[in-house]
Structures are given as structure tokens and as C-alpha cells.
Length: 146
Image (cartoon, rainbow, N blue to C red; front, side, top):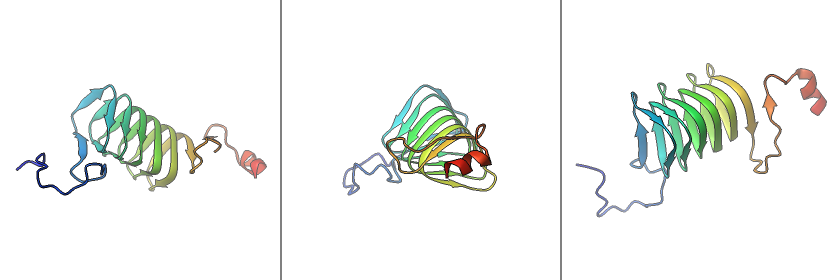
């Protein structure tokens, strides 16, 4: 009846992306503080504070995070105000609203998604990638650099 019984289970205990290892904060839940997860995390409620997961972070359509985020992969349908650092792929869905700084290896943005802030992209782990600030970027500056 419950999935908590692991007797006879042949699933790896270290697989953070396993479907039954999902942490969920449902709509109507408000959390203030720090959330740390070893596996996937889905947020459909409101979180104010630091969010960290070694797995995938999903911010649902009604989900909202105000604070710093660190994760391996992220699918954003809701709203983020703050800093997000993604080790692999950051996907902003059509309903996403991101206001702040994002750092990611790969970025996917659907038409309709809103982004305001700075972006550092690429697999440059030493931070050598230049930041682009929307308030200071002009065509002339981009052409000067190339």
C-alpha cells in the first residue's frame, strides 16, 4: 500500500532520479528557510530561502521561489526571484518568470517565458565566462568583443 517498504526492492539506493524519490511541496504550502534534498524536488507552493538539490528541481506553474537555488537540472514553469545555479540543463517553460541571476551549462527557453537579469552560460567551471547584464549590453559592445 505504501512505497516506503524497501524489503525485496532491487532499486539502487543512490539513484537520486528514481521516480519514487520525489520530494514535493504542494500548492498552498509556504516555507521560509533552507531546503536541502538528495533527490528530485517539485515545488508548487511558495518558498522563501535557499533551495538545494542534487537532482532535478521542478517549479510548477503555481510555484514561487524567492532566494538562491542550486540544482543539477531545472524545469521552471512558475516564478523565481533570486539566483539559480544549474549544473546541467535549465529549461524555462512558456509560463516561467525569472528575475535575477542564472548560471547554467545549457539553457532552453520556450516562447512566452520571461527573464530579467544576468546569465552566465557554458561549461566553464572556473567562472571565466563573461556575464551579460541587460542594462549594459549594446550591439556596439558585443561587436567590440568579437
